[in-house]
Image 1 (cartoon, rainbow, N blue to C red):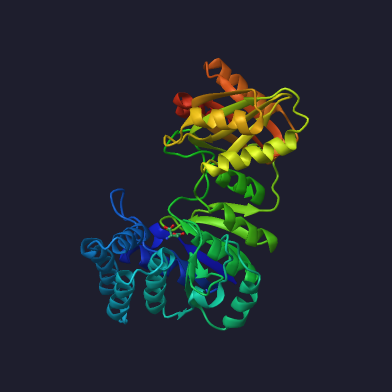
Image 2 (cartoon, rainbow, N blue to C red):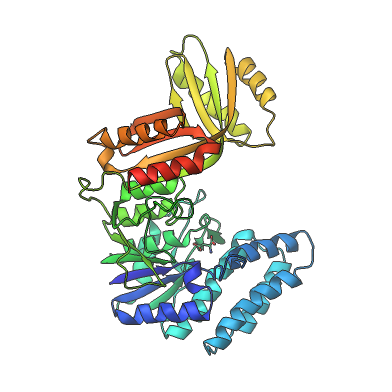
Length: 431
Ligand code: ASP
């Protein structure tokens, strides 16, 4: 049995939805189809989920939602008309609009994007509709609650085929709760684990993962195979083909994930597994994040480092700053946080000195973080040396390098202004 999930661009309009139908029909094992809300049809277009959040925002501020709501409504009506689907869509839309006006929760508003699309697509395919609110249970912090798996098993008849909405379930208070953005990937992974699928196919608009974002460099190449660990690190460090939290359920059940392209279904795509032969391809990718600030603190006698570290996290957390990356020296700690313009850095300096007895605080802004990921980094320094040599030759200085913290990645900080050049150089080294 195959669980397949179609992302927003794969179900953005009637033409795309008919492609998904052809894919599903081509293999009778494709029995569970998870769908996103309609995504962008072109660069300038709106994602339905964004429009739903916008609408919710307007409604909760007592502003007129007509213009935004009509865009949402028309997208669905157009899909239903072109695909000739008979449904109670109009009544559903009226009821959702009423909930919006009644100041429903943002999660409820956003979830309707997947809900409506799954309903329409189930009718179009002639499959059952299973509402994820019936089976997916999400904890306070977005975690998947264990009863979810039993509920799915109990509600899925193995002789039937289903279309289910991604992105949401029920929260601890019994109301609709969504995962974080892009969370339909998580839904697919959950169904795959619950039903012990042979494979979890994740259909998108690219033929798998690339060593690097192809919009940044022509040296990016498609990766045929990647491990769960590598994929998670790629996602954490900024690659956005697959949601980082969607790895865990499939990994726990050892289910292969196959990322495939709805617009080129015959291409093999990328397979995500627990192991791969890294001898030919030691490094599978690089990912990056931009606009960071380095906070360097110095304190003589850092034997109380552990406590200091926790207190620091608290101080930064109180300002909404999350440490993305850190490097420790003997008397020095370097933290990389998003460069938020709203923050009074001088005030932070005074607080750190007064509350934590830190002697010196300094900052450097305009920093980008690049992660180089590959199981091959565990066994050899060679790939990293080649990369460092190429960067040095191009005159790109490395602000910091963290190698060995995770056995399968090296993370470096460089000047943000060199970001694209550095990505291009590294991509060509690992091409
Ligand atoms: N529709 C949601 C989003 O845009 C979830 C998803 O597509 O995975 O984030």
